[in-house]
Length: 70
Image 1 (spheres, helix red, strand yellow):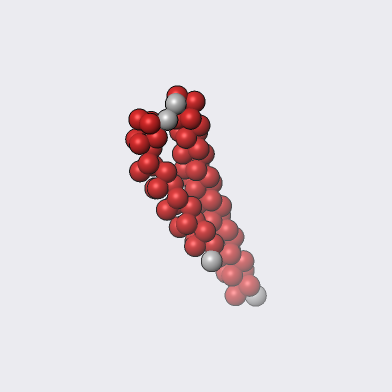
Image 2: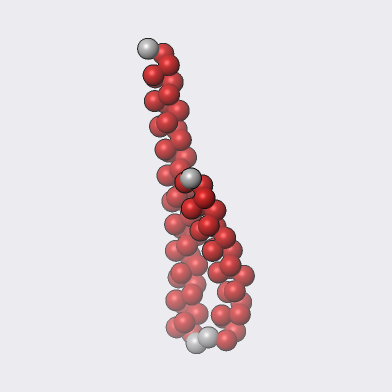
């Protein structure tokens, strides 16, 4: 279930990235800067979520291996 949220955020980041050239052409400088900050924040959030997912899976594997050994 966790990967569903990650996939949805990834799709949103792709849509934002695709619309970025249009925003840069049509919007004011401040709005373009805000858009760019939003894009960078979205990519950073996805990176953090991927890292958290990997850590959670590693912890689950460790707990599964510990419970099997006893």
